[in-house]
Image 1 (cartoon, one colour):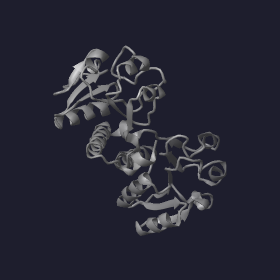
Image 2 (spheres, one colour):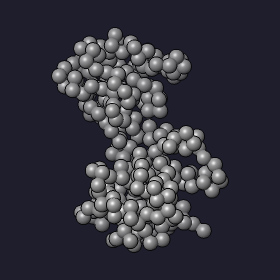
Image 3 (cartoon, one colour):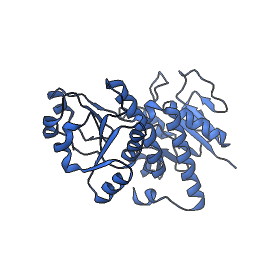
Image 4 (cartoon, helix red, strand yellow):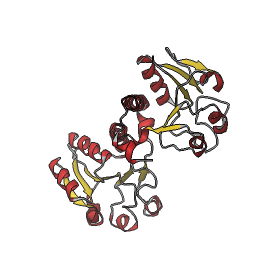
Length: 298
């Protein structure tokens, strides 16, 4: 027998999650979307938390769960809802799915929390809208085509790999900086020019656009001193980021920090990815197995 989900708050990603779950035969109660005009299909739209949590087996919290640490992130509801009130409806019999989330208050009560953001499949698939969003901003900001432009990608993780492939497909001249020799070999095999991160300062004047994906300071005062004033810098790394924005401002260089791109540029796709990941977690639970990310992350 299919179980029931409660989805309190969130944005268009949560709406898409609700739709995907109903397509799989799950019951879904939605709270916090009273100000959103849409056809909710088979989703049950609730006016109160009590109604939404009435028969819930699973709870899906928004990403982020809160923007101020006090209230639920519910942009489509005028009246704020406190996290304290929200948590009062969550019982140890429910499994909570959330991204980049922890709650000592819930954990102390024995509530199971599954962080879907730790899953590798979500991280990999999220790299696609992140890379597309970065290209969109680059096209808007640059007075030239990406075709034949000279681009540097700092870091060759999930986002770096996807971004390099997309830029290659646009016939840009792609250089990728990495630390590991194995990554430098893979970069070369992918048809890009590999350089060591230590070489960025020496080579930076030769690039039109620099995309950073490393969440540690790699581009600062010394690099900006050598960079051209018309080079565009785009940081795709999560906090604390990898670009010194204060120094960029002092040097008169255009530097942009793009955070949480999947939810901004492709919320429907991002919602589908979240729903797919949550269903994978449930499937793993039923089979008594766990992904490597679940075994190695708290």
